[in-house]
Amino acid sequence: MSGRVLEPSLPSSYRGPYKEIAFYVRELLKCDYAFVAVPENDSIRIQGFVGPEDEKSDVVAATLVSRLSGWGPIVVDDAQLIAVPLASGDNVVGVLVGYSPKSGTFTADDLEKLMAYAPVGACVVSSVVVDETSGNRPTFSDEQLLHFSRLVTIGELSACIAHDVNNRLTLVRGHLDLFEEALPPDHPLRMNLAVIDRATRRIEEMAKRMLDFSKKRPRCMSRCEVEDLVWDALRLVQPYTRSNGIDVQVHFDEQLPTLEVDRAEVVQAVVNLVQNAIDAMAEVDRRVLSITGTVDDNHIRIVISDTGVGIPSDHSSEIFDPFFTTKGERGTGLGLYITKQVIEEHHGSVKPELSPRGTSFVISLPLGC
Image 1: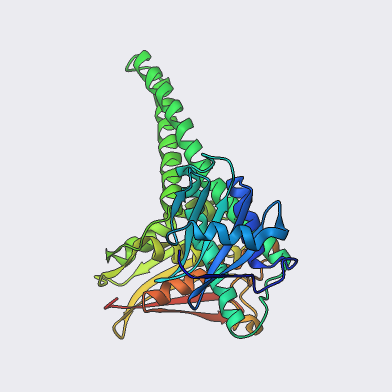
Image 2 (image 1 turned 45 degrees about the vertical axis):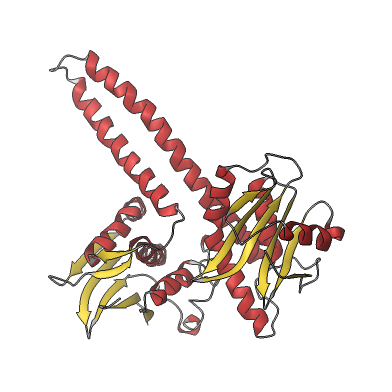
């Protein structure tokens, strides 16, 4: 990696976004050192360095950066050094770096973990870059950043849980097969085994969706049916809608044109809006989630509406800001921000329609996208 290495622009005592990201990376990888490096003109600036010898951070970081031939993802130096890029759209906004003096520290699993974390870290770094360019210090509070760290940890745990669930289900299904072979064809317990079999298949399907949803992969554009995209999202949150007693109503115009989109990204955007809608109805008796799909002026409109408490009008200008939430500890403040990014990268728009009887979010995607 070429370019002059610059010292951090913020004091080492300032526990801001970069430092929180580095702390999380060090904890995630169980390594000695971690930091964020961001491009700055023809140079590279080190940010948020954490390690056992913070007073030597500039020397250590400069040495480690010089060993990288690019932005990664890569494991080098006898598996002592790991790096993964932070990408926003087509631009690299930084790189996450971890280091341990012990040979063989990092594995392919560590690289996969860091790559899974990178998209969320990139959202934070992109926001910090914008703030610093305008001459302002980052505005994220310590409480917000600590909550952000917990959020990403839960995301990592979810993938691990899904893997573990699949392993346990393999064991359960194996024993079911043994019972089926041992029971006579007309045995009444076969009906119970069939119920167990169907339940395990549903759990297996849910775990697979969790794993597929969490995978980091390059953008993949394909022609998709709008109705399929929405139903994919609804299947992901089905346990959530059922446990909250949500009446889901879906209506699409007949023969809607297909869209060329990244399926996983658009599904994620819809999931975020649906989850917000469900949360908004937690304190009301009438809980109706309505999703419609129509064609309007060379655009496909997907409208997601709820019968919840609504969003106060004085918050309407902030709802797409990263980390802004009206849910307190229940909210991450990233869902709407990421949704807006995804839809705008597909040349569309997402806008709220507010009322005291609920909220609607209107996704508009051009037919040519």
